[in-house]
Length: 149
Image 1 (tube, one colour):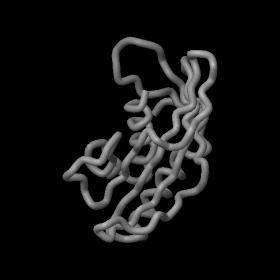
Image 2 (spheres, one colour):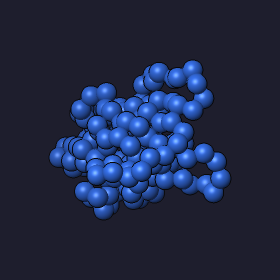
Image 3 (cartoon, rainbow, N blue to C red):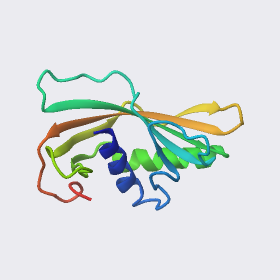
């Protein structure tokens, strides 16, 4: 389900900035050695979510770590993602395999607004935001402001 969430983030953020492409500016799961200086890293360690006791619903904790040569570029990337996903609901997940259940992101909430972390060892600026993606089995009809991309 993590790959599907990354794809959803890419689809939503690329509306505001078409450079949010997986494998280029948008990295998933871990930082690759030759990652560009300006990159947005999506991680599965966004805090401790509440896991529902039933098997058809889960809260996915996602951290988005933005890095750039300047403070303003890193901040802009963090806010593009925040504005694209925070507070949204009713997104049908882009299914990446041909079989299996459909999934619906019922809500996406940031735990806080993008936070400045300072600079890394190479003086690149960092911003971080943690999100909870509430996901359940099923799908919904697209409506104004949400639904399938």
